Image (cartoon, rainbow, N blue to C red):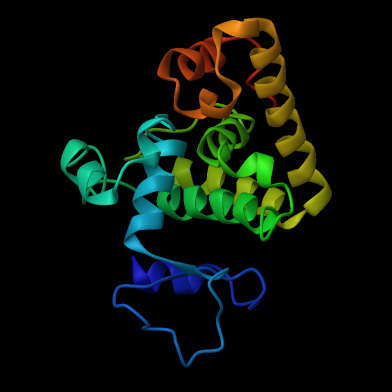
Length: 193
């Protein structure tokens, strides 16, 4: 995983590296925007490819146990792990400081919606299919205008769903409301690709 992540992109601004040991990249010149930890990777894969953004907020140890037979499986392509981290990192980079703080709590839902906007994902075991799918998403992440357009569409889907539910949904906790999120994901218009 570490070698794979390090081989995808060489541009320091865009590069993601997988940190196996704490402070492994402390002297590398890379910042937290470039570094992906096991916690971050677990949260992102559960959200983006297992399509469970409500669970993604859980402690990674809980997620590793809960999804032990569905994530970090040897037969899986590594591409979905990279892509899920890339999407989530792009969203988080837009939320640094107070910028777009309202988006922060919905980041796992947004990451899934952005990923779904690229169409149906290949099976996790389909390395060739996942590589092609990943390349499209990575290119989209590099095109700020295209990425922001997908993100704004996802935000609009969430805002519209909240508005249509009225007082049935607590706006502050909608990102953790499984019924609300499941209905959002089942609703039409998610496939933006």
